[in-house]
Image 1 (cartoon, rainbow, N blue to C red):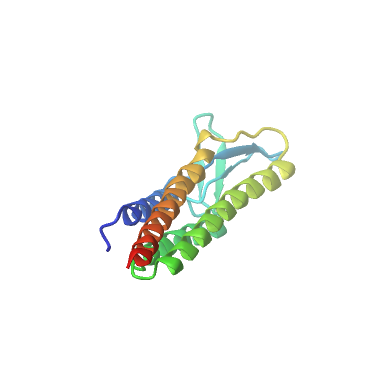
Image 2: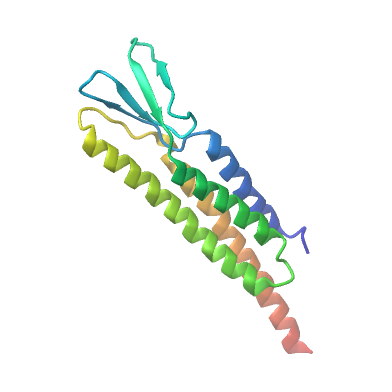
Length: 159
């Protein structure tokens, strides 16, 4: 049934992924030698802005993160409607968990590659825990689907 608790968990994954598309999960500023501050943020499309100190800040987009977030949201929505095939739904949820972990790895690799290039100053935002918040409902959905499958298989044994 579509009104099961795992559907709510998977819809939570989709909503968090949509939120993360507009709120950068981590924000880093790197001071370049040319006086331009490079800010990693896929919210802005390579645009310049001026911060409080009057410096030009270049925001570079990260398209791989956006593609991963769209894929995570789409897979979670597909997983909601696979309630009749719980084994496939569990496999999709496992794949979803791996996609979230891959997303987190992409964020860290992006951060550390740019931090080597601009080694003067950088900071990692607290928002890096958002992919962990994205992973929690995936794990909860998997265990809810598994408990449903165990319940159905135990009922089959009684008959």
